Amino acid sequence: MLFVSLVIIVAMMLVSNALEIGTRLRGVHVALEIAFYVLIAVVVLGGIVYPLVGVFFAPIFSLEKLHRADGSARRKWCRRLVNNLLENVDLTDEEKVQVLGYLKCEDETDDMLIEFFDRKITPELNREIYDTAKKIFIITAVSQNPVYDMLGMAAANFSLIKRITEICGFRPSNAQVLGLYIRVLSITLIAGNLEETNIEELIPAATEGALGKALGIVAASAVQGAVNALTTLRVAAITKNYLLNADVSQTRKELRKKSYAEALEILKNMLKQGMEEKVKQPVRNLFGLKKTKDD
Image 1 (cartoon, rainbow, N blue to C red):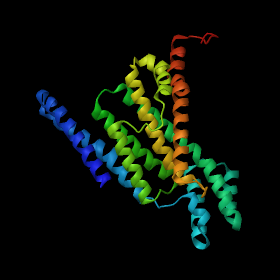
Image 2: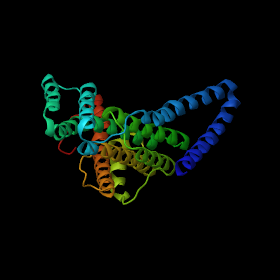
Image 3: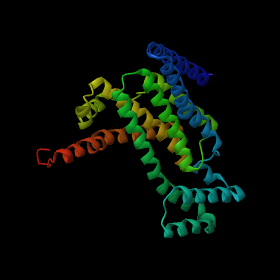
Image 4: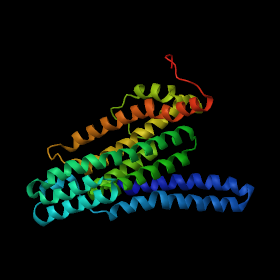
């Protein structure tokens, strides 16, 4: 009921804002209004509905379940993990031979394969998560239109969840996926959940960096972008921990705390380092400036 209610609220807000903009475009030409509605429909279907539904086509699994599996089920999932590594990760010839050899290790196959899978898949996931969070920060910090913010947030988060399941080759349980979707819809409406967050830690990093100066982003907009990026990182970290956590002793509360700490650390690094590398260094190169001790 909560999920359906959030879907209805988001849909009503999108339709209301789209009709308002469409009415203005009609004053210019009716063709512009029609083109705008078509564009909105394409974005919603391709960016929200498709990734939202597409996740459910992946099989339900996690590395934690591999520890509990035995017999044919254990062999089946070990083989699936190996095939997924060969398809989605750029392995050397030696690594391909190594991972195929794990299938012959009998009782040690699951432990050796879990360690290898986690080590090779995590960098791929982190790259996708980092890029998505960076895009959300820039879009929502620069954009002052709630419709664009909502569409961008929802599309980016749903697509990221789908991309994580594609890279891993499996998805969380139905209840966990539904919980993630409710979280995405909630942060789409309220610009994120800031539980236990000290916003004062983010304001200097968001507004004093090169990106904030270069684009002239006011403090409120920069913090809004940082908040939205943090919520995206939090959703992604929870999804990743649902799938890759093989420690059966960790509780859900511990996983959530771990996900929050991981998301906040990534955001701080992104604001302090990543953005300056993308903006400050190209400006230096453009004007031929050399780095000094004062810099």
